[in-house]
Amino acid sequence: MGLAVLFGIFGLGLFCGMPVAFALGLAAVGGFLYEGLPLFIGFQRILSGVSVFSLLAIPFFIFAGELMMQGGIANRLVRLASSAVGSVRGGLGVVNVLSSMLFGGISGSAVADTSALGSILIPVMKDKGYDPDYAVNVTVTSSVAGIVIPPSHNMILYAVAAGGMSVSKLFIAGIVPGILMCLCLALVAYWVAVRRGYPAETFPGFKALGVATIVALPGLMTAVIIVGGVLSGVMTVTESGAFGAIWAILMTTLVYRELTWPAFKLAVITSVRTTALVMLLVATASAFSYLLALYRVPDLLGNFVTGISDNPLIILLMINLILLVLGMIMDMAALILICTPIFLPVAVGLGMDPVQFGVILMMNLGLGLCTPPVGACLFVGCVVGKIRIEQAVKSILPFYLAILVALMLVTYVPAFSMFLPSLME
Image 1 (cartoon, rainbow, N blue to C red):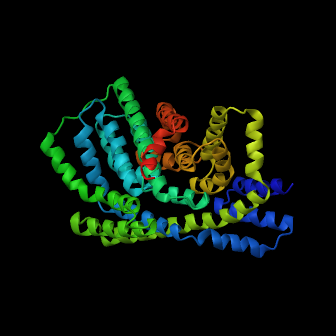
Image 2: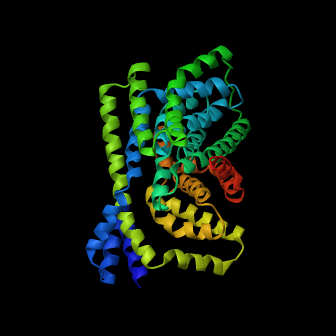
């Protein structure tokens, strides 16, 4: 009965339009009152949830991403991608995917990727004769790379929710799956472009490609500094995030000289708002997760799925389906904090490494950002592309399938996510 009260209050809050963080907090309070537990235990869980040193890296990553979005780095990365692959048939679609892989690996945010690159590429693609739905679909789905390819602040949330696992292993584990996913999306983008008869751009020459690479290099170094600092052991995740933000300020003000004072203030304000939202989610989800553990939800779920089938392949498929459905209706950060303590023990019980499960979780919930009814990236992409969501969804299925193919490969072939982390041991 207590579990019904917990999820009943949470579901009612979401149905009434309450923000997820408040719905989690209200459900936790209701659960504590129903069980007769002192509320100060709930407040202790809330405080302990945000009293984690590695969480300090999140505001630095978010701030660095905002600075790069406002300071001209996205433009240089698009230019580099266009010089490299723009000459293939329907090349701007492939350019879009490659740009997302480069920028997403720096900003670590799918929504920032969609907003920054979409505002640059979608108008250009429409001017070149590409259909608006194609331009939006490529931009939206390729933005998931920002969640999988390091550095990703969502992976830090997962590391905290999983009990403090190695962030450096999570970072490096996302590289191959992220590239694999972008490769699948690029192939689909090319296939759709050929079917629709989109044009190819003229190859600018190797000299132009070299110049574009040199110009984009300072921006690309942001990701190298952040990830390299963590993997080398020179810096902690928090220190690398702070250094990355400083580097972004220096590059956008002294090298590119495009970061204006109003843009800087906007980056600060946006970063503070996003950080506050994430931390509030972490705090309330911590109290909610305490009750999940009290009610033995992971054990109940494990018994449920093993009762349906004892085949690990089927169980993993069921977990993926559940995560995909949840990703379609809830916020990603909240789902990471809620689903990790529920599904991780089941996955580990099947012999899966927690690092591999983290990558699978990111890919599942990242796809949820591109799907209705609450896909944030889909909404942003449609606003930038000035089309209705219904128009975009009608032709987005091939791009969904590309991500699902990559997801299945990462799920059933551990080497895709575990090969690089194994080299660290």
